[in-house]
Amino acid sequence: MSRRAWPAVLRSGDVVLRPIRTSDGDDWRRSRQRNAAWLVPWDATPPPGSAPRPTSFRALARRLRRQARAGTTYPFVIEVDGRFAGQVTVNNIVRGSAQFASVGYWIDKDFAGRGVMPRAAALVVDHCFQVAGLHRIEVCIRPENTNSLRVVEKLGLHEVGYAPRFLHIDGEWRDHRIYAITKEEVPQGLLRRLEQARVEEG
Image (cartoon, rainbow, N blue to C red; front, side):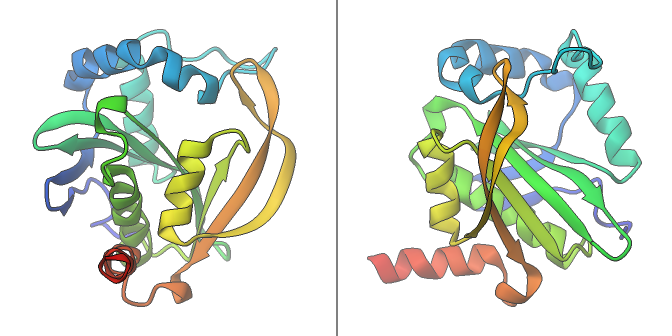
C-alpha cells in the first residue's frame, strides 16, 4: 500500500472526502436518524450467529480506523460545503495478485439528486487506482435499490454478474447485482470521464 493512500483527503469542487473521525458522531447520528426510513432497507446487518455490530458510533469509528491502519478499509466521510452528507467506504481490500476492493456508500437525502454521490464515488475509485495501487473495484447493489443503481449508471460501470443471497441486508440474505471497473478502463480517471459525460449531455 502506498503511504499516501491513507489517511487521505479528496476534493472536487464543493465535495470533500476525508477520513471518518470519532468527532463525527453527532452529525452521523442525526443524519442516520433523519434518513432511517430511506437507508435502513439497504443497510448491512449481522447474520445469525455472527459477531454483533458495534453498539455506538465511537466503537464503529474505532473499528473502521483500525481497519484503515491495517490497509483493509478506507472509510471516508462526505462533506458538501463543510456539511456532513454521507459516507463512502472502500471495503475488503485484497492485495497480492488481485489488487481488488469493493466500494459501498450512502448519502443523506438532503444531498441526493445533486450529483454528489457519483462525484464522491469517482473520487474514491480514482484514489484507489492512482494512489492506492488497486486494479479492480466492485460495487454490489440490491436490484431494488434504484438510487444506487443510478449512481453506477452515471459512472458507466459495467454489470459483470448476479449473486443470489450475496449479503445480509435488512435482516435477510439478499440478491445483488455486481458492477465493476478496472484501471485500464479509465486511464484519465473516472472523475474526468464523469465530467466529460456531463458536458456532452448538455
